[in-house]
Length: 160
Length: 160
DNA sequence: TGGTTCTGGATATTAGATGTCCTGAATAGC
DNA sequence: GCTATTCAGGACATCTAATATCCAGAACCA
Image (cartoon, rainbow over all chains, first blue to last red; front, side, top):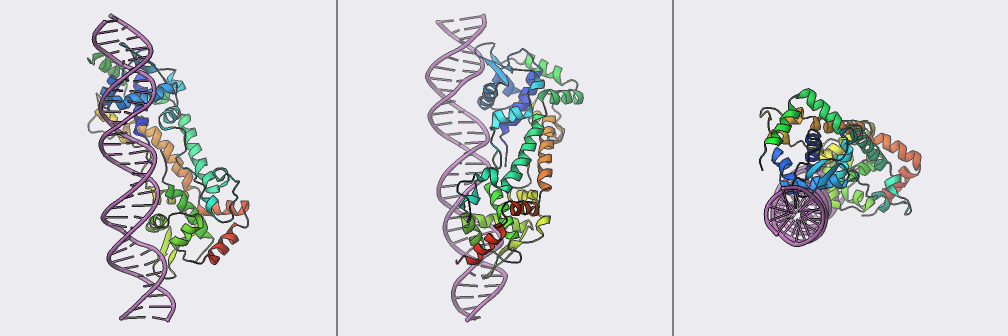
């Protein structure tokens, strides 16, 4: 059970973009910031855009920026945009192959192993839905007060 | 983010074994019950054995059985045995590549994105640790009172 | 018009999950 | 002791998904 690395990239990208409001940042510059592969990060940013988390503009002076208030972007929003909405535990309904199975039953609903796993995962997602990018940003600024300004000057000084 | 299917197999196997106490059940018979590939299910049962959840005996009349009381086998025990103890979200410490990074810091601990994701996952695991095989069994028996007896007769009548 | 950037599809590469096979060790029954 | 059965575990094959690159097209600015 390993999560898409793009989730990590996307979350950090959103934190950085929250410090650059109203500014379009290109995928190349964001990739350079953390030394990530540009084209692949671009794919993640596209996914965030399709999900309505970022907005994008083409052409020179183009790039990505947050599409809405960081207080309204949850960690679950990002996880879902990058990794999809499917649960990690997938009930393959093995009970259906067992003796005494009801062929009409949907064991993804009925099976109690499946229910227990889904309940735990639902809780996990609920917890991520309660955490916003703004929450993270607040904590980062408390931990490293210079971070916002450092980020802004880094992006301002980056040539290419 | 997709979980190993073996987790599902292992949980259902443990439920079945709880209805056959003191009896050694071969991997072949367990596989036949749900029409699973024998050799591969055997690998999962071996993992459960290494984790101390099952005990195994070789030779004729050999097989697997629960190594301890179902009330003392949690869903987390099984998940960990099959899928390992690693978190799904792996902090790759991309902050380390960023400007102004502390080369000595362990960002798996410091990074606040990482912390938020780890906290949610810890909660998930805590919830699974609170659910035992005995809990599942109790619910299954409430839902399908005939299940234990049906399982026992099925295994008793199975020839090969 | 030319250069820049996002969009999205095609494709390559790699890692992990899934599944099979085989040898060896343990064990029960004869 | 001999044989058949079963687990233990490594080697290997296959398949799928993640990771990564590339390119043609559209949007956009100067």
